[in-house]
Amino acid sequence: MGLPHVKHPPASTVFWLMGLPASGKTTLARRLLAHLQPEHPSCVLYDADEQRATGVLRDLGWSPEDRVATVEALSHAAVQHPIGIVTLVTSTPAERWLAADLLGERLHLIHVRAPEELRHARDALRPSPAYRANPAPDAPELSWTEPEHPELTLDTTAPLAVSEKAICSFADSMFQGGADQ
Image (cartoon, rainbow, N blue to C red; front, side):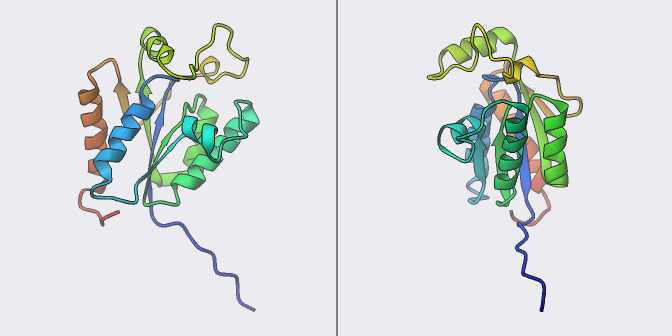
């Protein structure tokens, strides 16, 4: 009796945008998606906030166990596509290491940052603000540590067009000279 056929995911690239709530991750991810889709129509975006509201993360919160499950679920989903874009706070080194272990060389960590005042001003405009006067003990902003070696850091105090150009150029550099994704 032979071994069962195992379907391996296609070779893929995963752009993982991490940063505190309201730093600009989703905005930049959507711009990156719009930039990549004409040449790479199977490119997908997995936004953690949207997935918590309607998708695979619906039953997960912010406990350490739920954070591990979130990283695992988003990694698994993104790697099923030639190009995946993930937005997730990813506040601790352990969460980043887990993503790196799961995705290996396919993972490209991008740190999106903005100062506290700007994040809180942006957050106030959201339908469901992330920041609260008395955050839960497991709120991601309370365990945030600056990433040590992201491949790209974007400061979103710059005009959106500047950050957009930087992330799109970074992504384009991943595909120069390679096979079409």
